[in-house]
Image 1 (tube, rainbow, N blue to C red):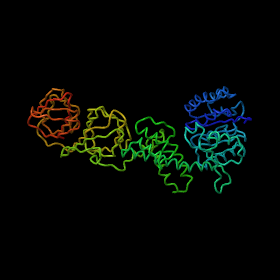
Image 2: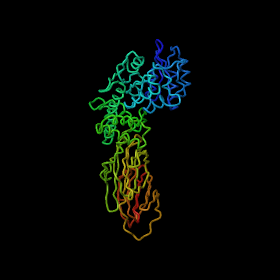
Image 3: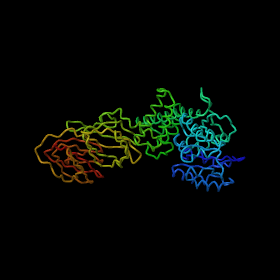
Image 4: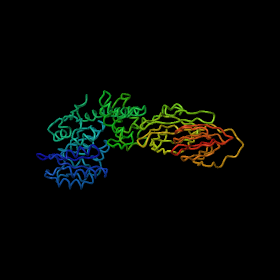
Length: 540
């Protein structure tokens, strides 16, 4: 340390480490260099660093050149014109990374640091790990070497970049050491720098800051979990998410985590891009520290929250932001109803051969988890199509598009479908007909009609055939359906039937028919195209 400059090396420049280190680099009283083992992260930091060091800094160009040359830990040995750092900060993921960077290799970095250097472990580590690192350092350096201090932080990337982190510093014996004023510069002038006294029964304060952070992370992890659970419930019961969020952040149920993570949760629920600022595995690590430091059974809420984060990793969400924990709660299929009990599925007709539902729900709405146990024909009637998330039990969640007039067939008898559908932002909500095939029709002893004039065959399966009939304005057609069938109207229209009466038809109208021994004449007397689908029950 020169008379007015503190030399700092940072290991770990991810979302929080980068903001904090760049904040220090922007202050003229610091010379700052950094390294990250992940090359893309280091390169991103270097790009920002060059524009951060103030032009008024007497060593601006030297520092920028040196930072660009840093490719390994060895490049940070005596990096300040041959001088060592006054402070070394570790903002890495866990204690194993601290050990690898500080204590490992043929020439451990700790051995290059004089006793005047302070190593600040600002990552979240178990208190026992802090003591292990200090002991290993002492053994490596013959009982001396650099000073190890734990000072874990909280606040997220935004506060890190603003120099307003909350810091839990194991109370130092000497407040004049250079790292103390440095910590004040990244904690709002010291407003959120907390000195944690030594734990009861301990002879040193080392590890006290990490213990405070562990207990803090119990709250943080539980609050993220409960925020995601609440927002998932809000979504599934049909609350307006934006309105609900605005309510909570002004009311007693708010928390910092709800306000911060909740915004990104809602963005993802509405199929908007959600920034990645704190990945799911971080809280797997942190909550394991909490539980490991507590007595068995003393942290039931932490254990429950941990199970949700662990489930998220199992679901392949290890690279996602922890605000996406809502997907774990949305993956809950503990309560599944029959499709007939799902309130958005409206039963329109039911007989020995068919059970047919008209399904309609708006953008942002999600069905209950429900089961389809019969083979089904699905006809989508969303005028401009619909974007959906189809969340299938045991498979996960996938995006889909329901195109108007599209016909699908689901074989659910042998393998029932259990799922939830969410209508996403897009052209419109979900509108469809779900026709279940309950049984084979009575045998007629007649060959199946190969073709029907004016009808297009759009789906052929063992149990059904599906035809489409479209009539232009003024067009007429005679038809005879000599099989058991369900007619589903696709487009609005006005039909003249057998020159005797006029019928108004709208999408989703249904009519079940038995084999007819006579023909029917229909004419489109409206001013737009009219269409319907005919589902034929086949003998099987």
